[in-house]
Image 1 (spheres, helix red, strand yellow):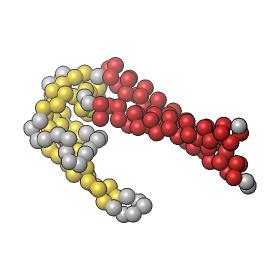
Image 2: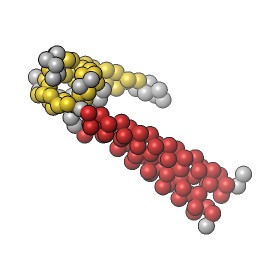
Image 3: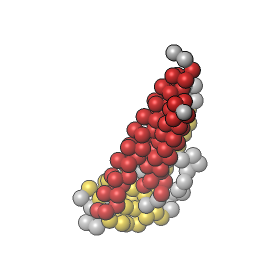
Image 4: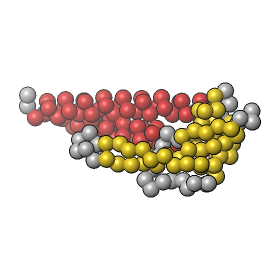
Length: 146
């Protein structure tokens, strides 16, 4: 296989991965929009920070992130506690800090902190990386043909 064919193949793979990432980003964006359309708001309070660890499969490095546990009262009067799916190090929230919550009134345990980070970060990453991969990949294919 010559260099031009290798670059076209590599470009095609990058382009396809990019398109798939953009499709995944679009799906998560639609899910978030549907959640926002039916969500109710509440004021919550950070009642605990849970430290979660993850290990890098490539080099075994362990990293830690602090996920806030938030307590709020749903429209039904029920007190709800949930753990945010996103965490950070250092912690993004402090114990006792008030936060605005969005939650599904049909299932108040499906709740999120009302922030770009919790609602849109995964979508933005998938769309951004997908777009870059698609542009670079299909650019390689077109450049090798021209």
